[in-house]
Image (cartoon, rainbow, N blue to C red; front, side, top):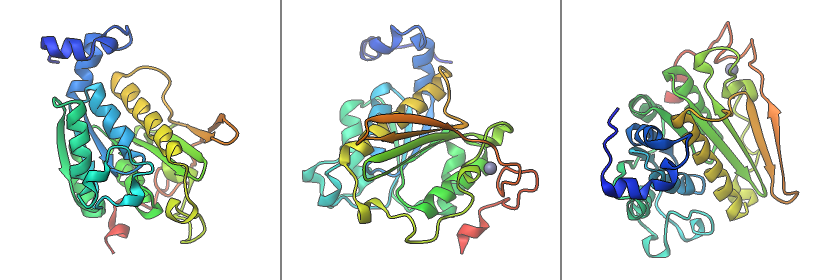
Amino acid sequence: MDLDFTEDELHRYSRHILLKEVGAIGQARLRAARVLVVGAGGLGSPLALYLAAAGVGTIGLVDHDRLELSNLQRQIAHSTARIGQNKTDSAAVAMTAINPETRLELHTRRMDAVAARELIPQYDLVCDGTDNFPTRFLLGDACHLLGKPLVSAAVLRFEGQLSLFRAHEGAPHPCHRCLNPEIPPEGMIPSCSEAGVLGVVVGVMGTLQATEVLKLILGIGEGMSGRLLLWDALDARFRTVKLRRDPDCALCGEHATIHDLSAYDA
Ligand SMILES: [Zn+2]
């Protein structure tokens, strides 16, 4: 690993390097890392900004949407002046402003099965910052099949949840389908655009996601695999529940029936 840092880098990352759990080696690990952030919205904003600030060397960002006025209540990587721009381009402006050393790979396209097969293998790990079940399931299945850890967060109204899936490494790690076996029927669980969300709740969950990404790259702390963190902002209470690997899971079970992404090609 390249441990050469410029004076500027030593300065910029001095508060990281001071931590014995990070140090120069950890900072070099961050610089060598390649992270794919899917969604440049509410979760993706703090994720992308903190990962760039932290010195993650290469960040891929996938989003096909354009910035709208109603996004700005929570999507803090963007700005009023950039309404109408691609979210990838708009987020890149903010990320580069924080850290021009971070290499950005902007993928202004829909995250579909073709994009999943093409993009996911190019990165060390993936963060799910999307807001709909079909894309969440696609990412969960794709990361499992392609052998990449997935840091996943979700939000609604005043609540958030977070976990890490790395079931491709085998038992006892559960996969996303051990938690939710099937995509819920449309309309059963409302989206943020239907039910609303307190903007800051998305920011907290995206920031927690960034924390788990950094821990994963650095190889420090307790990972979130096998645990689901639940936060209720109104109660001001966090709790963690155990997730168990389901031996009959269609994705990671002994008799798995999902072996590719063909179900998403339709
Ligand atoms: Zn499973």
